Length: 84
Image (cartoon, rainbow, N blue to C red; front, side):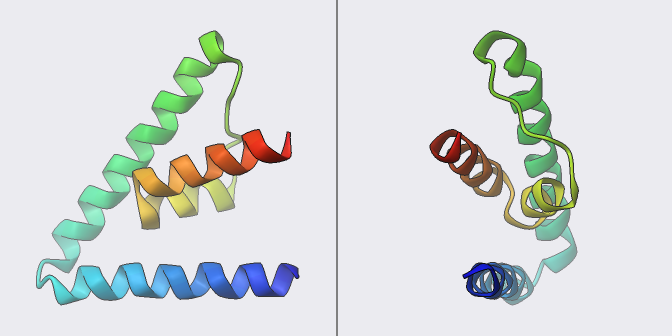
């Protein structure tokens, strides 16, 4: 089951990177997505004082935030809330 989830995540990451490359502005798209994901991750952790929900900063959360942007951070939040 873990291998299936890892495979699905890798496929989604490749599709995301492929669409960035297809837009003919790969560097700009990747940089803005990474910046947006990092800002969303910082906002979630900053608002954790009020809401009590924070995300740990590890390779998985930072990587999904960088590659997928805000939807990656929201996905991590939903997974944490559902599994908690």
